[in-house]
Length: 146
Image 1: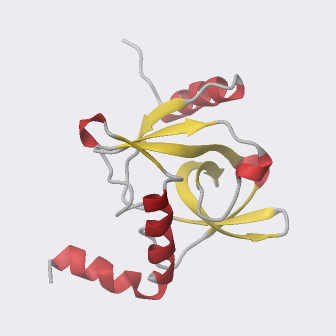
Image 2: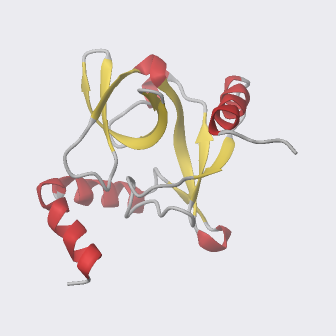
């Protein structure tokens, strides 16, 4: 029997990405909820060019020993400010060298592929960004079905 660890999985994904290949992964966790749903949505991770790293883009990055999939929300010099859509306060500040891939496509249940650069996806991001001060209350609403 072979044990497949997260480290091995991400090492293999990075190897494919470095060769210009894209990788499909299913996420776990709720930090990108409601846009990405753990266990049901998958993402297509792709290599990127520096100009692809813009506000609103979802990226896979390495941060304090963990691989995270969050959205770029700003930039401070050579560093990117990143936050999950489902996160109310905390952000990560990471250099470009720690960004591994960008998400170009989400695969919804049933296999429907949705571009994260579509007009609908951009509208979602603009609306969700404006709701940032109120997200904690939306979280309570979801948790207690108010």
